[in-house]
Image (cartoon, rainbow, N blue to C red; front, side):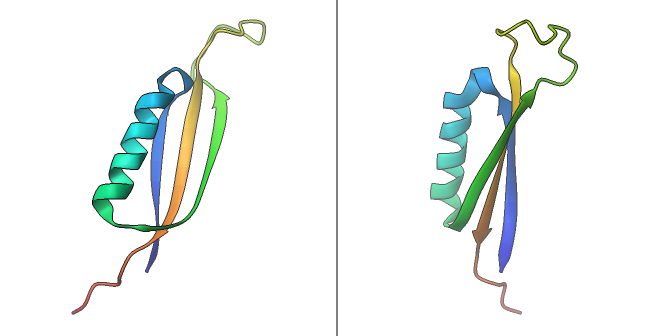
Length: 71
């Protein structure tokens, strides 16, 4: 059965997000089909387009497969 898992963070915390995703993959036993992501200006950021130091929101989508539950 195919499913999705979403991870959300900010780009200044990418190393922790990577650890979280890798930890989830190891513990879940999921067979990953694909991973995609998006980086967007942070919600509510007032820094404006000239502020190159403002953080951005990061969304990672993991498409994976697990065995269907038996009933």
